[in-house]
Length: 78
Image: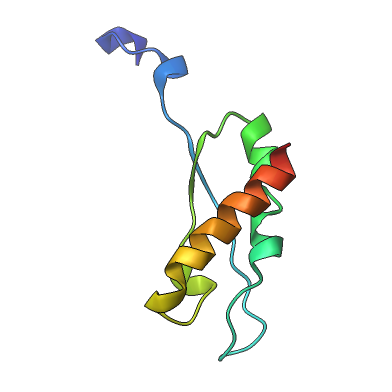
């Protein structure tokens, strides 16, 4: 990267959650999926990808889901 004028420190590192589904019909546990966020932050990840449809059943729940994610991540990283 340095050969083309880029600094590795400028790279955005994007982390993610790992959804585990208890069966073929249930959504994944959000708390379990977010548990890795503090460790990923320590490793330098600053942006996280969370796929709502792994944790909720429909679009009407997206707003509450997003608020819940932020509340939980704030609690995990406080």
